[in-house]
Image (cartoon, rainbow, N blue to C red; front, side, top):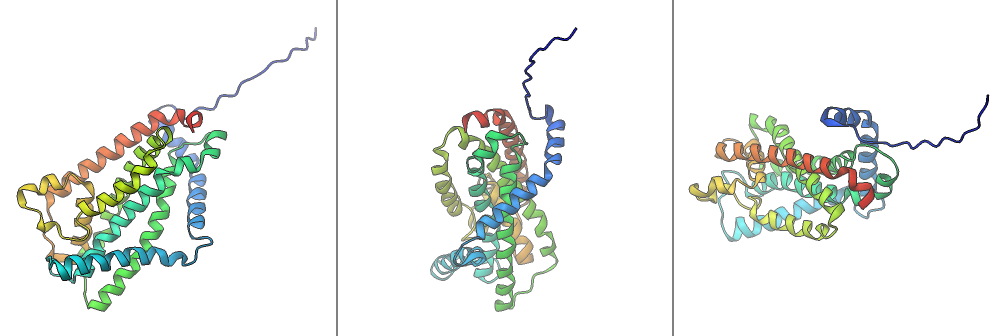
Length: 279
């Protein structure tokens, strides 16, 4: 007995349930992560007038402005190193953070077509956007060696610890990127807040000046900005023994970074299922 019946099947694709399965999904889509990161790098430098040089010009000009204003005019202390090197040592992690946050915050909106058509762990998108900023950082880092040669400044063994503070800067940016990118999907006006937040953060972070200027009783409060510990760490690694490292503030930065990263991941996962519908 043959019966002709039309049976319709609905294929429902869901993200891996639970954190363990989700990380397995992320690993399975590692090639997509590499593709998106490489695509973003190509797009960033394609059809630009000055191309890669922009990654050098922007922090370099900012360093000159801060050096003239705070070093020459205000006569702020430079922790035993040339003021230009002290400022540039802080500009490197700040520029990495600012670029990463700017790129990752709009990454989901920029990949709306991809999100609405296929499933993959959405976490890949803001994470891959951070890679572009890491490329900028590596390019900008070359200027630091030029400054050291110019001022005849020789770093000590502490410079080998830079990868530690670089990782910390990336984690801060990634945690903030998870938060802002997810919020930006639902509340589109967040894209107008980010430039103001970055500009404001530049002036309240110890980029153009040394953290040593902060009164002792306020240092721990000031360190509630997680980038303070990152910037001080870079200066300690690059400038050497002349920098008094404030360990309580750095430990607070570690705690705050972990909090931002974990809470950002939690909120991202909580809202991830709605991205395709809202976007």
